[in-house]
Image (cartoon, rainbow, N blue to C red; front, top):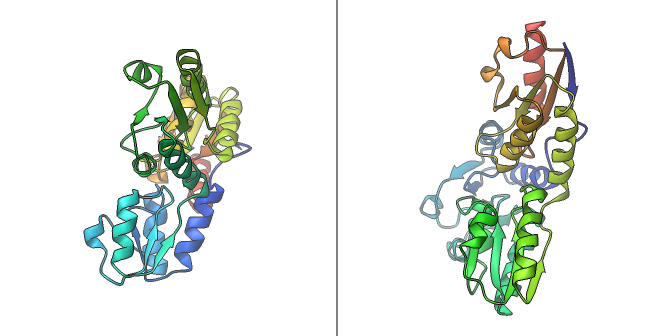
Length: 276
């Protein structure tokens, strides 16, 4: 069986930056998981003594704290600074941008619509910057239920599918006098999704590597599944099953933006051991 890796996959700029920041601040803690990859978080704790604070209550006064790539709510940032410790911002710049847009558009009187998961930490942070009405939606069905004013501003979670975002845009534009649309889906997401789509159309089996809580990895798996029914989302090599690869000619590999190269290499090595 041949193994082919997608042309674009794995660590994005924001994740690489956050990992570097954490490594440069040994002994600090992160408020919430730095990235959505448990194995990489364990490595940071083991090798750099970077601990995990699950809530503001876990952050000790005067302690150095790294803000996660997904960002945190505005009020949490204020409280964190009041604790008197060094605050190290590892928020991805692609996440900071929609925070700024939401704050500005909200102050100018626009209703804010965010294409994203209301329970995702990135969206919780972005929504917190609104000073007026703000809504998180996952598709046109959700938008139809909203009672929006004439002026609407629209942003997207950085890891969402552009196709669904376009559907929301096309629904809003003819129904409101003014719709401000901001493309806040990051380039790495576009590139990884396009590469996964291309490979999945040719592969007999797809392995999508990334944290089970990673939004962008879930999106990659969804795309692969739509073209290759034998697509599997795994976090570590222990989840691999030999029978997935029996009788297959081409195994495609892709990985989410929070997946380090060492995990990808370990999984590919395990697949090769099956010798199918």
